[in-house]
Amino acid sequence: MTKVMIRVDDEVSDELLSAFPQLVPTVTHTQTTLTGQVLDQEELQGVINHLASMGITIIDVLTIPD
Image (tube, rainbow, N blue to C red):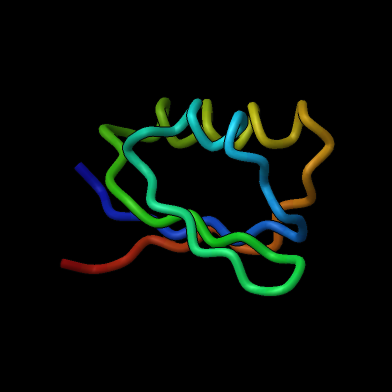
């Protein structure tokens, strides 16, 4: 597993956040940061694709070292 942080330029709805139970949201002003574990690159890409398909602009995707 890899710990990641995904920062997006939007307040993400609870409904959309429910699609990513493995990620913990932190909302500040008009940005949301999702932090948590993903199994592999494929799962991370799935999260990124889902956010993008909802029209959400992704600002950062970072891997957090152990």
